[in-house]
Length: 142
Image (tube, rainbow, N blue to C red; front, side, top):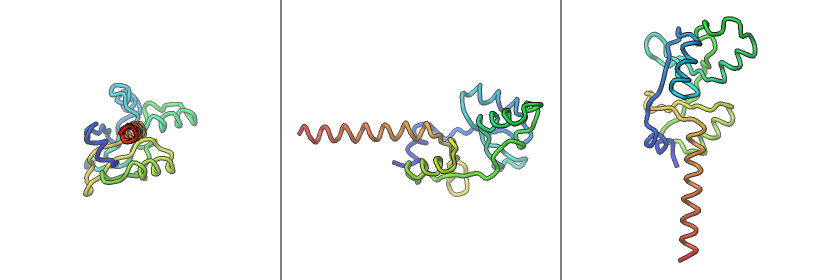
């Protein structure tokens, strides 16, 4: 199973904020869309990083004073890890596990085509196992 199978069912919609957006604006967006992370875009519209609810919580634990008015660029992860639509689910699970993050932008030919979460990957893996189980049951029954 491949990343493209996830994108084909969930779509390629990706939410983003500008580097200058405040943490308050970010939190509003995360809550409004019930998502856990967004990409951060620079003034030219290029990907500058990613910021997640975890980034906000970690900053709150360090120093909560004035956090809501800070720009997201102060909290975002700049070293962006990505995957390709042709990567296997096992590959992206490994990337996410080693990096200890839950969201992964999907790039194809230098262009952003979507973002997947660990929840998307786990859901698809469960579906894959259930399908294999059903095939084995049918095989044994015949």
